[in-house]
Amino acid sequence: MLAAALLAASAPGALASAAGVSYYVDAAQGNDSAAGTDSAHAWRSLARVNQVTFHAGDQVLLRAGGRWSGQLWPKGSGASGAPVTVDRYGDGANPRIDGGGAVADTVRLADQEFWTIRHLEVTNQAPSTSTPGANLKDLRGIHVTGTAGRALHGFVVDGVNVHDVTGEVNWIGGDTADDAPGIHFKTGWDRSKKTGGIVFDATVANPGAPATPTVLDGITVQDSVIANTSFAGIVVKQYSGDAPGAVATGWGSRTSAGDTRFTPHTNVVVRGNHISQPGTAYGCNGVYLTGVRHAVVERNVVDRAGTSGIEAYFADDVTVQSNEVAGTTQKAHGADANGIDADKGTTKVVVQYNWSHGNGDGILLCQFVFGDVVLRYNVLAGNTRYPLYLHSDKASKATVYGNTLYNDRGNYLVYGYGTSLTSSYDLTDNILYSKVAGASLTTSSTIRYDSNLYGGATLPVPSGDAHAVRADPQFTGTPDYTAGTPASGPRLTAAYGLRVRSGSAAVNRGVAISGNGGRDYAGTPLYTGKPDIGAFEVG
Image 1 (cartoon, rainbow, N blue to C red):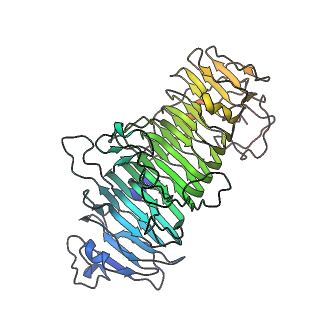
Image 2: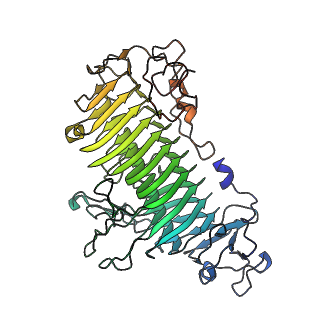
Image 3: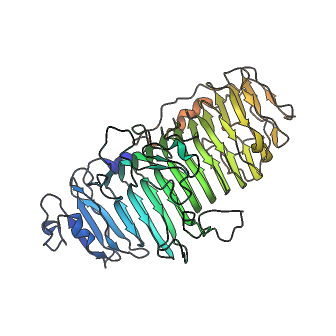
């Protein structure tokens, strides 16, 4: 799968349209005075590539095994159906470009469109110092940005390996008294959370006089490996105009679901990637999508990130499905450590078929001010604090059904408090199982429990669940907490130990829910007979 795209191997360049020209670059034997149009007359340097304006169907082919330092910023744009493609040629490892912390972006596109970037190894690591964090700067591996004031289309990042990017960590709020080397609080919206491995964003030429928004449309990041990149692995972010001296635009933020100023990036796909942050104390989010509409995040592994594995913020129509998120912890003085987070101002969010294990919180619902989310057919296990954290407020609504929560480590199953309980939550057909006695399930007039199964050690079953099932769910085994690798992809079957046996009290005891997606966690059609409780339909 994913590994095949990244292993050292023979790989021809991507096919160009008939009108396109292929340009070759060889770090060892090239010559910048050569024509560059065949492998025997290749260019040598990135500087030579950066001088050229490329056109629809052109290819920039870097020799496999080659290594370059500095920045790749080819100019020009492709066209629909005929992108400009950056790829490799020849045998060997992916060509490597190392920014060395000397350039803000190792690979950069600005006010360009219809580009495909494939099979590169990209780093941007500033030299370390004796002071931890002092080498963190405004750095990215691959950066696509724009100030054009119009829609820019057609971006594909495929089969790349981006690692060791020492980007600074800037938090939106907080207290500047908590600043530390490389970590800054209260930086505001536009100056925060825009460093890391692969970043798509927009800004304006003159913050004091913004004109029209730049919208990135048609973003795909797929089948790539991203490791040890701070702030995040993958970021998609829209400009809002909140820096000192800037005029607020509202393009990247929302005050209501119908906010007409909200002008998000559109049609975003993050698929089949392996994102891990074990080697950096500053590697926070795995995937951070904010200021987006129509997004799908699927079949990714996010391993040992900080703050949040997958987070949506100020977003509309987002589906998060079939991902494995494991081992998220607090990093860089951040407050959170969740697997998946539907955060502030998010609407039409569906979180389904995910395997979230070994995080602080399994899934966080943090839809401040307004929002709506459906949480269905997920398996949450081995999370150390709150398997399900209810932290929305005001005009937010969460529909939570058909999930399996397995607690073997903490004192909570479902948790919410304070103004979080002014939101509306419906919890139906879920298995709520704890090996820890007395694990808390928050109750409130705004939390509706119905037809859930409560099992394991003694639990305080909510009195409002008139159809509660108190029983051993009869799991077929136990979960396997080994996280997926670049070769395996998400190990969703590692949760299959939490399927229930045919004689389980969960079978045929659920409530039918319309518009349920048509299948369970394992892909079994819904329903076989009456609905079963939990993430698995017995069939």
